[in-house]
Length: 287
Image (cartoon, rainbow, N blue to C red):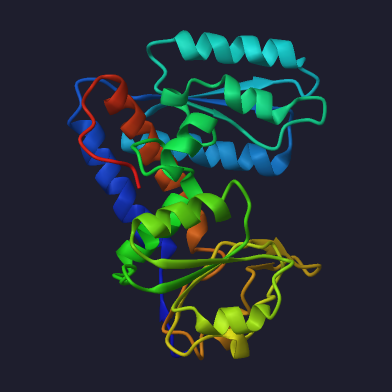
C-alpha cells in the first residue's frame, strides 16, 4: 500500500472532542430527539450508537420508538410536538420508513431549524444558494475528512460518483463552495473510467461494491469511499477496490472506518449548531 490512510475513526474522535468542548461552554444541554419506527436491526444499532455518542459529548438524546404500523397522521402529530418542545434542538427521523409512510411529507414536517439531518427543502435550498443552514451529515463528514487529511480542495478537480439527494447532490454544493472544480458522474455516465482518471479528488457514493478499480485512478489522487456494501461472505466493502486502488492513490479512506464514523460525529455537530442558532449564539456557517 502506497496511499496514505485517512483514518475516519481518528477524525471523528477529534470532531467529537471539539463538539464536547462547545457543549461544555453552553449554559444548557442541547437536546436531540430520534424517532424510530419498527425494529429493523440495522436501524436499531445505528440509533443506539447515536445515543451513546451523544451522551459522550454532553447532548441529551432521547429515542422515541414507535411500532412499524404507526399511522402517518400519528407520526406527524409526534413531530409537531417535538417541533414545539423548547428542550429539543434537533429532530432526526430514522430512515428508511415503512412503505405506508410518505417520507417526503415527514421530512417536510420537521422544523428546518431542528432538521439535523439537513434534508428539509429549506436547508437544501440554503445549501444550494450558499447560505447558512444545516447540512446533511455524510457529505459534511466527507468535507471534514478532507480537511482533517489536509487535502487542498480549492482549485482541485473533484469527481462525485453518485447523484443522490442524501450524499451526491449536497456534496457537489459543498465542494463548489470550497472552490473545487466539480464533475458529477452516475450510472448513465459515458466513459466513466476516463472521468475517474481525471479526478484529483474522487468521492465514490454509488452503492456498487468494489466497482472502482486501480486503473480508474489518477496517480496520487485522494479517494473518499462513501459506499458500504455487504458481500455474500459477510465482508463489508466500499465502492472502491481498496487494496489495488491504494497502490495508486495518494490518500484513501477504508471501509469500514472511513466516512461512517464521521456521519454520527457530524450529526452531533449539527445538533450543537442547531442549539446555538435557535438561541442566537451561532457564530459560523455549517459547511
